[in-house]
Image (cartoon, rainbow, N blue to C red; front, side):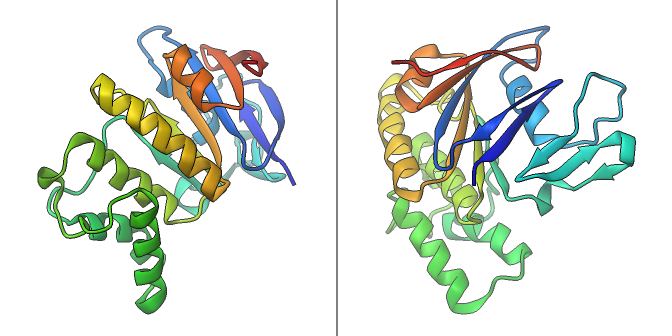
Length: 220
């Protein structure tokens, strides 16, 4: 089944399973690209009186102030990769990736298998014992990506994940992101201000302004 992708006061969907969507979010009032994620992630309850529709995923209501419904982000099958890697500086790459699984009480052989597979997927086999300060920017971004994917999310939101990298690394990581998305088959929502990146990485492009999707289509 497809997944409904929900934005402020507008529902776009159902989203095609395993698709890559590029959200081009124009800067509005200094909010930046996170404005593209805010209406979908709903990290906080939308009880501010704004023009919110109930947020749903696979038909399940996640956030609806009118019924006092709010499912905390940690209980949803959605993962986020930010521009700032947000790695734990005191933990090795393998422990950064394992952190979410440990919180979900995953232990033993399953924990080791899933973490190993995630690190191999992003090309970090052999570097798993290094701490963030011992890794390059591109490698740190791969750790953040592995940490998100190891939880087997249904939707992966990427907020300008390549913005902190230089041009050469950015091009390399674009190739890697496209390969990984095809391999794992997870629905990607890639939020960026760079239309060229969105065209390269996405199957469909959503143009957003002030939290609203104002245009949607393929880049062909």
